[in-house]
Image (cartoon, rainbow, N blue to C red; front, side, top):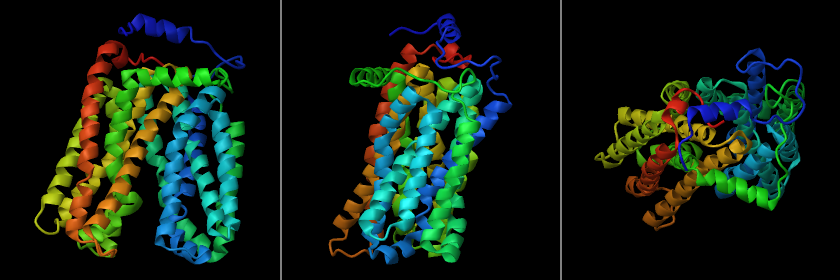
Length: 452
């Protein structure tokens, strides 16, 4: 595959086909309507994160309502994450076929139905089915917002808006804490979850009235999805070394912070490092803070220096490895200042993983952008699931008595399993960065004239 000259990229963009009805005077990318479309998409994603996280403060209530233990309660979260990861490629294909507006509207309706079902669920199996559909609906939002951003904003602004989307969207997890606690106390289980489900009505109205798939048309329709079309689309996306580079960038940066925030951070800090419950909670909150301030900064840097995206990721992963090594090798419990540094570097890993989506944007034509994004988006979640399971298995191995009182030594062994994932990820980043740079025209990339 040869390089794409600037002239060819410009010509391709100028003559790209438009699908759907075109209105008389087309809105300009980056204008007021662009921000209105983005705001509705962002709100939809934020609420999806809210639904995803709404069980976090309802854990004790759920154990009583469904008469379940801690392992069964953890299954809710694990299943949601697994479904979310497995849905990424199918959702990407649906977005390429039906457009982001239609898929995001479907996801909103699925989330409404799922939360309503969860509100009335009285048995553990019924609740599991409801949370499965929460994972499905959640998976149908983020890719759609990224597709809207790629259509509605100038190329140089896309990395910043993408990072801002991820940063602000994660506020849904923060907002789920206090409001859901109050709702559960005042309205009870059914009332609280019915209230959260009703938010989808407003979002659906906003999606129908405000959102359009691109400045040129309200609805973009791709080719029909046959087995042959799907196979060729996914094969073409995966064949481009830029997509593979984005995949391994997402794989290598996200899993450490996700694993701490999802399940093992609190036990590691309390049992492994001897901290109090309150201090452990503050440290876990600092991971979110790091993601919020670093996301816009990385977005700005990626927009200014797109050729060095992989270098940024390699540097961030190296920092995570160095700090984790210091924590694990520290004689006895690590000092608090070092654990604070750890929260910051793993927190930056979340926004760093989103740099992989920019590789999808600049390595694939618009008609398969969402499916390429889906391929990349499943990488970090697959790595996170692998690490979550590995840590649990190693903790049980190093604690043969079957007790849940894990020792600091057991946690050192368990957390050291990250080095396997880092080694694989970094090796693949270096490998595909060389291949990607052989086929990407640097001048076109830095001029903002990407494939899409």
